[in-house]
Image (cartoon, rainbow, N blue to C red; front, side, top):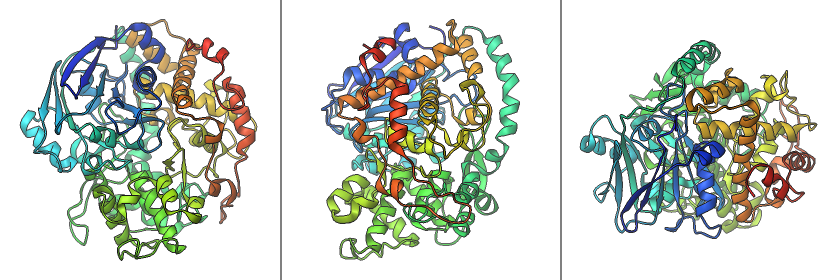
Length: 611
């Protein structure tokens, strides 16, 4: 197949068995790659009753047909498994360079099962695969592991590893690649699944060529669109994802004090991308083949946080470890971000559970007796940093917070569940569903839980048109009419991005779906159409839902926490809005061809070839 290596690598760590199988073209065309193909393997091979941290839960890593080609921002891969945080479908998408090198080592995907008797790492070198001892690496942070394995295997390798958080089975542990530039497969606890298998790292070297169908057509098309995307994303290149902090805060889309406060303009300005550029920024980072360059490189040379030198905090991190906890100390947030990268821990969930604990402390539900003397008040950056350390090492009160906000609220009891902000167990990213009704619906129906990337609608509800999907102007963010169809379409397109392996910032900066269709043909040679593109995205979304249905998910789970549905967010420039989720859900299910309970119908599955 053009655009694919045609092989899936399988490793059973329990008996050190290594094998590979052919990737069938029919399966590739139906599910593409990335999270789509990963979902197909998960549905076929993972029991809904499997213990997420048990040896039978597969850890699935997939690239896609765009990965390894000259397509801009395509150096990506997806990690799919059953989440130890939510107990349902997990996907975590990551950029950087690891996926690019893995695919060029001769494989489209990797499926890992079993548990090694002792700590190991996997070494993949242009098709040759070994399982090696990692006893000396256990306990080390991700940056240390990257340095050591580059010394052992060569500086031209790429390392993906877990830190102490993954080893200690923190339920939102992540997998980190690209050394101190720290690209993260951050969400859903995929790092804990890796740690449960006694797997410390996966090292790859790849130099093989990937054959495409029509290189001239691909090059011509990229040359036409690339300058437009570069121009449109200039602000992101200059200030990173954090360029949106001030703007999002101005109309109520930025999280403040565990989602309870309407505005915080003075704090947002202090932790914005603009402030970062004026103070600690020393450069930017680009994932493989990236033409945008939103990654930050920061350095702090003096003061209490001297020594920070690596990836700067992204928008989501500034929102969750910053404003969500009422912390406006940019250097403290950068330090906490670096700790999370070294420990291998999702900054979004980390900030979410700490802000939850701060509110519990403020309300007197927990006290300094519970926190071992730590004054866990909003705005206390020293307490926030100490909690980051405790969570990663499962010490003190961090033992409980390492379970995630849903389990922590259940154990604390009382009113705690009223302000435990999550969907299906996954903590909110830094966008408020009260600011966008489409975002509210997408949070509720996202297969992995609260996720702003499952549909990526917020930009298209505020400013951007999408004529190819029938929207000549931005879809009114506060209307209910047509939101079901709107969100479903955007989820389908997002699923294709996550399966082809492409950064969604290409979409928000002007990449048309029709050009993606052209690239699919240029790379694979398939006679592909816009209609097949949309139907494949629909199939991918439905197969993820099917796995969740097997795990017991239905309409009862497609909801938002009480605060998002009842607490009016107010402040200058903020339009008070509480999402009418019931109406939108019914419209959404009807458009998708699901039952009133949110279950895909037999007719729908037959139409998609999923019967």
